Amino acid sequence: MSLHFVETYEEESCLVIARFIGDILDGDKNRTALANTTGSAFFKNCEAAFAKGDFVTVLDNFVEHINVLFTSLADKGDLDSYLDILIHVAQRLRDSEDTSQEQLLTAAKKVTAALTKETDKHAEKRLSALTDLFNALNGEPKIQLQVLLAITDYAKSSSLAGLLALALKTHLESWIKDWQLTVPEQRTLYMAAAEVLRLSKKKKAGPVDAYRLVVKALATYQGASAAELHSVRSKAAEAITDFIRFPDLYQFDLLEADAVKQLQKDPEYGPLYQLLSMMLTSASIKEYDALVKRHPEVLESTKVPAEDTRAKARVLALLSLASQHNELGFAAIKEALALEDDEVEAWIIKASGKKLLEARIDQLRGRVAVTRIPQRTFTQAHWRDLTAQLGAWKENVWTMKDIISSQTYTGLSRGLPAPKVVHAERRLLDWWIRQARKHGVKPSRIVSWVRRKLGTSICIYRRLCDGTLGCATPCLLCQRELLRFDLRVHCSQGAALWFSGRMSDAGAPKSQLTGMQRRSFRKHDLKQDS
Image (tube, rainbow, N blue to C red):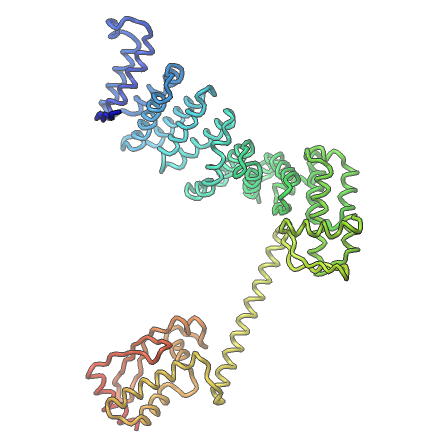
């Protein structure tokens, strides 16, 4: 089998499509009369527009007769090629300097409308062409948003949600961030993507992910107007129903959110909100039984078997009970959950197996020691408590730091062993002594001189902090980061000596002194300070 490479140009590829569409428009007419036929006029119009670089006209002509390609082409390869060229023309339109934003948006809407017009046997090809158009418009976020919404609508109507679900789950958050969408645009996109994921049957992108997107959309309605809140009543009720229906969901953060809380007094969804509130906050299954008895229709609205809903209510009641006590007795759990004696341990193990509870069971004493339990809901009150707790911890850490610092310097002044950090001063003194011996100066002179300059009980890091960062006391950051530093010591007669080096655990720092500095060091400082 031999391969043949044929060089073609962009104009040739586009004109091939134009000629093909023209031939289809002419049908069985005689070719000798093509000069005055509809097909020949279509071809000449496309040829003239392409020669002028008028890609708007070329794209309009192709889009107007795009359904001709879907109905006339039996070969899938040819159809793919023609659709690729169509998207390429749209990309050329985007890259053209003469194309305005409004023209590009209008052209994109025409292409999406033509591709989504029918849900026939070529639905997958149409969806693929739409995604190619979306990618070709990269860098135009507002237009990409419109195309993406059209893609989600077509995926739902053509039963192709599974092909789009994983991409939406993976890239939706990055699109919202990169495109810098407004709050209304975020809501629209969240809801559209959630509808696609709800129809998907994939395990990695399905109804549970749709529920999470709806929750994110409802969170954007905090502080919204009454009209806006009323428009999402059904979506809020849908989120509550999903929370009750899905067996692995035990956390719901929107109990106090405006979009959900509005259902509290709603005549239609009021009992559903009461059921949610009771399941999240009640520590007894008896309240659940009483509510279901008063409103038996509430379980019918969730379309969940009554036994499954009661089992979930029991687990949530156990979590509420455990959050109130560090240690529980079997008798208290039995009464709160309406269990038999031999069922208590099984429900504790069930909650622990779902990683909702960490506890130790003492079978001999009939007690359960709770070590960790997550919040079932996280409201503004919880945020305030967490902020206060973190503030208290921060204050305690700073207090402990001040105590350690004061005790360190008190111990040094009393002659107690110096901590490892202060050994930097000793290494510095050792280096000065070696320099003194090198230049024939008595070590006693250099020791007394340096001690008078630096101080005997003050860590070198403290002097560095006072001189550079303005700290009142040395901190761990300085002790770690000031391993490389410059220390300037002013001498008695105005001469200056610069010490520049890198501290290391192996020994004293290395330094380079010029001849002038060494002479100043010998003749002025040590001689005058001796």
